[in-house]
Length: 271
Figure 1 (tube, rainbow, N blue to C red):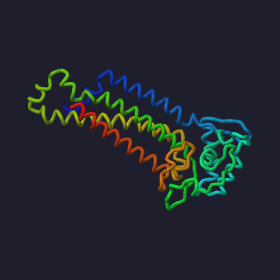
Figure 2: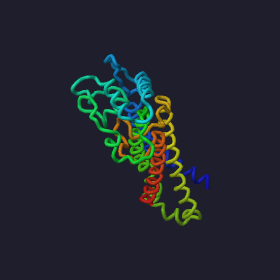
Figure 3: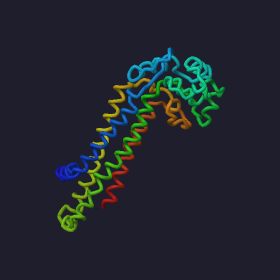
């Protein structure tokens, strides 16, 4: 059985179109990381100069650490007053992750405080714990990249797994296979198991690489803060307390589950 699984797995990965699809996904993932990783961070210092990359990430973490914890109206007002650029269009400026997070829900067009309370700005939130402010940019970047990456991975799965069963029909060898000793059972199961092995291995490689890259760039800072408080308008309507760490973990589980479900659907269509 193990030999059959290895043979079927080899048939999947040896096709040139699969190599091409995996290569394209690797390039796509690199592009996504460049747009969501630490090198994409931009922050404005109090003197008006801008910094980027790792320097901006370190500065954003420093600002977030000063205000981390329960989000209150006093903190909101202090953040908006302290870091506002002082221009009529200040609400559209990129300042730092903490300012931009608060500005999304509590700022006017000029960057000033709009007077909303936390409850008014997040009417759907019914959690017992208060919303916790912290550095969430690394987690939101991870989730955004993962969503696009796993969408692209879905196309790779379809390209790689669609011929698993249909290849015998196209080559007119299905009758020979089905009349063989193990054609109906062991061969069929080996194809299924090889397909799931391909899904788990490839998804695991891409996701583990992404996790490692984001850990190296952002670390685990801000994992306990609320995912609703971010500067990317992400998951703001979640009605219960969810930390950034919980959101990232849940996304990983859902991405893997989606990949496994897509594998099953592709195999059904292939049959």
